[in-house]
Image (cartoon, rainbow, N blue to C red; front, top):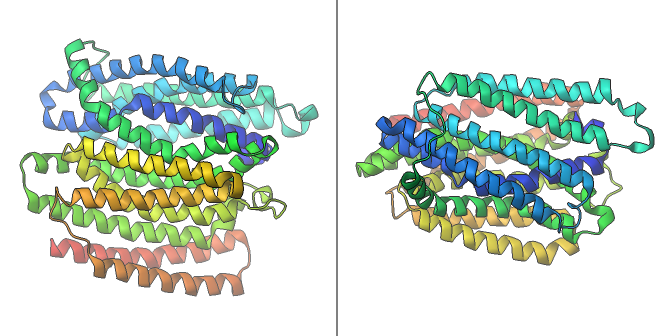
Length: 466
């Protein structure tokens, strides 16, 4: 809706603001979501104390982050306009509820009670959609905005985001209290210990977000001023799709974390290896599925969620070009998650921190070198290379914690099957295409069905082996 309501440059500003604020969110998060799940799994009798102090720690960190994010933005070109600063303030308020919501969700996740979270999430998204619809079609219709003045409607769109996260947090809190009554607690000795435990993880998570999102900030600084928000909009669209897909697998591995932590604590290497094996195969199969579908139907997907401006040949590159590059990163991101969570479960935060420092330095240096020459296309390529380096390093380190070894034959079968499907469907689409909707419904869902049959065949083989 926003890609069709806002001009491309204003959508670039919208993406830029949320991208900038999200970096500070993860700085305040300190990977406390994952740490909380692990702590509750290991000490269920202390659930109330853990949740209460985690919420308090996040509140303290948020107050610091609120002032820090606005202060830094004031000195960054492209972020220091009145509209950008007000938007950053609103999204900073958004982050406190997001962080509290994350604390509540960690309680649900540790107790395997996330079904209500799914319901409240859908309700929350529908409310947000309704508010934006009112802004775009009733209060500030696009055709009535004279002289392309988007100042007020843009700020109201930001307020809509804040309203829905408040509602979602409130609904989750009411439900979570049925599992365990809790509120803010200030046990300073425990807060200090919690901060000490989570800091290495938090810095590692922050760095992982930096190398994944810093390219957009660098685009807004290094690019020519007239191309800032345009380049960010064209690049952000496929990145937004990738981020949505990535969340699915982040939750999958998070659901595995309590079991992994338990077996690491009991030093049962056989079960750890089996869990790693099945998780790896799930990640491989679905990552190839998503990648194949995404590359085949990228233009159709862009035209459904945006408009032809994002595929325009008037620019040096368009969103379709960026889509190919950033979707490659899915393949490596999914797989690296398995080994990242192995390190988290085995409490090897120092190793994870070192790895993320290496990847972040690589990402920033090469973005500074190549963005001025090749714009956002090379920003996407550097993100892809960063994911490859991350995968290699976390796999190497996780081998010390698990007897798992890569199933090369399984990987080869997935590559061969994906290649065959891609070539066959590419021929069909290019020779028998009727419409965008037809392509997605008929070709897309048929391809999805065939791939799922193959996935479940591989999955059952893996289960029988275990």
